[in-house]
Image (cartoon, rainbow, N blue to C red; front, side, top):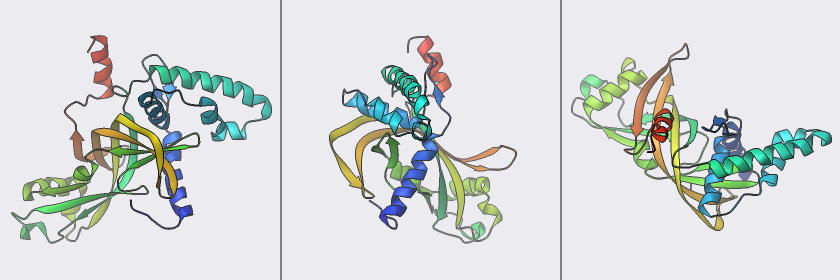
Length: 255
């Protein structure tokens, strides 16, 4: 596993990623249940090992509970444990994918002017920023879960033909610069958890983490072009993947 800096730096980096997920907008289930994507990961993990989470500890470790006045904590604990328990027993990993967005850097193997490179293949490498190379860390309560996404390496390292790269370069703006080595992307992932290992946590970035395996339903990379507009530059969708809206329609017809 890639290690960056001191233990403190690594813990802060993972914590920032987890905090971004925790405070993302909750997802509304078809039955009006709400939960965020860190909670989805926790739900999936415990479903795979046929056990119910300790929801009290999940609540006790939230900033909202820690900062609440003593008189508010009892009500908060009751409300939140009911919400989490209801969501846990209704959550379906195959249908409600784990969704999150990360920043990424793009590097290309060649930076000569494109007119000099007809017929030359170009290696494009995408490096995710602020998180490890080969897993996504999620925190629920005091528990850390490392989600390993299948085939992530193939999607982050691609070899493009001259025509493919020319299309990519135009979208990302590399074609306007003679020496274009990198740029910043936003990448949205949708993952389908498929299994979990409950035997024992392993040490990753000096933190004990439980392992969970997931499939990548979609990976969509874009750059901001202003006015809340996105320019998509790379997209991958698994054969089995349906957008959330299509999932809801298919459920109506008993998919």
